[in-house]
Length: 493
Ligand SMILES: Cc1cc2nc3c(=O)[nH]c(=O)nc-3n(C[C@H](O)[C@H](O)[C@H](O)COP(=O)(O)OP(=O)(O)OC[C@H]3O[C@@H](n4cnc5c(N)ncnc54)[C@H](O)[C@@H]3O)c2cc1C
Image (tube, rainbow, N blue to C red; front, side):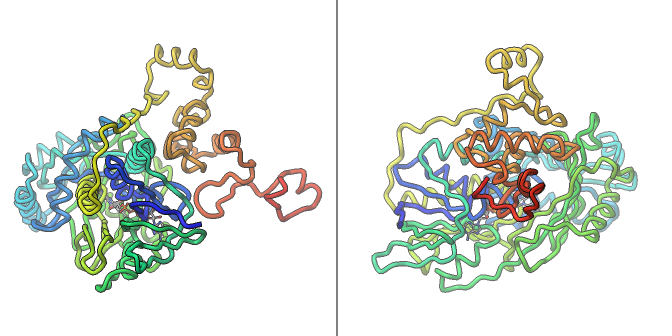
């Protein structure tokens, strides 16, 4: 059946979610199609989570423009959504005279881009600020406005707010073909359905060029650049309080060591050009490179604290800049392509501009009655004793700890599933609540989370998935295995 909407957005990463939320402020029907089973399954779930200040991008580029503007929006955005945002500041460290030259250039570049507070710090001051730093450090660019956020939690909250204001999200809808009909409407074909819309917005991340090339006269090539990471467990005294960068190269910002908003420490990423944008494997070579380079920043690196490794893929264009706006050769088609780093930092500003352009084209009127965003409740692990007692008295599910590593309760898991764009998979629950994010990586809580998902959503237990695709975690019932059945028929459970 053909579903008609005014505006159809392809991709529910941070860019698509921000665009959807901006458009929710207007009287228009907005639909987001996402090929995976949840929000933020592309680059948005696997990056460094830094709100870059904007000292790195070339002055005059869209990257520089959107980075500085987007970064300035994050503190207010996170406060309004109840999301973690920590302005921890960053240091770009230098080990020799050549690095010092690079750092001085970055300072000038940052000032041109409008970044304030940039200063060069010398060895002694650096080591008093960050005693775990390599003592061979000679200087660093101090970037006080650099901040950290949780990228996927930000996308979830933004999507929830969009959905509360009428935006529809459909998952497992892979857009395979897009055409312009003689009547000017876009016809969008997915793996399972067909959609019509007046305006089409391409926020497809790594697949942005594939959609673009079906509609535009100019063809684009996308380079898929993978970055691998180490994630270290939360520590009482994390080694660094600032994000520590090494000097950037043509392949990116280099390997960083950074605190996360939840108290973990992140090491990475690599920058490797790969063929398949879905290849988010980690490799022994890539991870060794991360350790080798991170040890230049942090000689006493604590690998024993590692709890997991992951990788994300950057959507890099040969022009090394974002493409944002309408496509000249295809009226009604808008795009945000090549949104690699600093794309997370830039997304709120990119979305504001795209939504404004679309509202002008469709002559949309603004709603006078936007539903305010529902601020997320304080997590149980962050409550004081009095707050905990009050929560448990109101609902005993607050007293049932499901994830012991991260102290996540049954009430929080149920709430995550019931959110406007709620979790449907174990990874979806994990990213919304942190159940499974701790040292045991879900070894203890995963079966309990699966039970709750089955109960809340009405799917049978063996049909609960870990994430996208066929990521089932149960092979069948013990009873059927005892009977000698090896192939599980999910429909008969
Ligand atoms: C290793 C790494 C580190 C980074 N670090 C930072 C950082 O610290 N700070 C920063 O500002 N930026 C950083 N970035 C960049 C940032 O992560 C991205 O710019 C941002 O997440 C891009 O968001 P997006 O929504 O444009 O793309 P994505 O998050 O990739 O979302 C695109 C979505 O579109 C969906 N999709 C694709 N094709 C189709 C289709 N045909 N049909 C339906 N759906 C489709 C995908 O499944 C995906 O969910 C980093 C990126 C990487 C990879």
